[in-house]
Length: 99
Figure 1 (cartoon, rainbow, N blue to C red):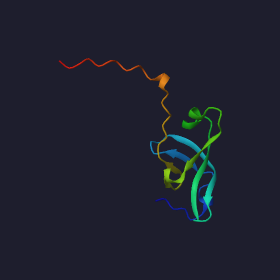
Figure 2: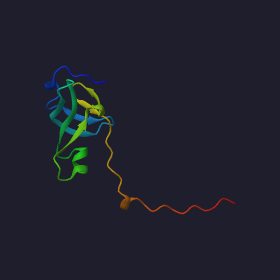
Figure 3: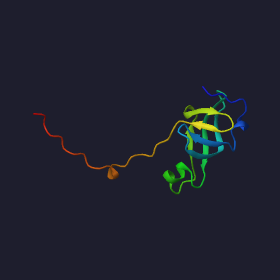
Figure 4: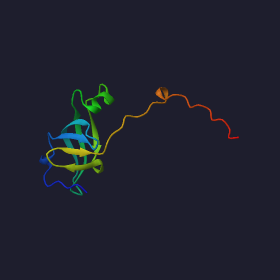
C-alpha cells in the first residue's frame, strides 16, 4: 500500500507506467475526507505521451489510487493498455478437426 504524508507531495510529479511509458503530470487529486485517504489522481496527459495518443482530444485521465504502485521522485502506476477494437483484430481462422 502506497502512503502519502502530504497531498502536496503528488502535485506536478511525472507519472510513468510500470513498463516505463510516460503518462503525464499529476494535476489534481481526489480525496475521501471521511476516511482521510486519496481516492484518485487526476493526470494531465502531456503532448506526445503514451496515453495522449489513446485519449485523442481528451486532456487527461483519472487513475484510481489502488493503481498507484509507488510515489517518489516520480509516480509509478500499473500499466495501462489501449483497448483492443474488434475491427482491427484479424478474423480467426477456422480450426480443422483432428484426425
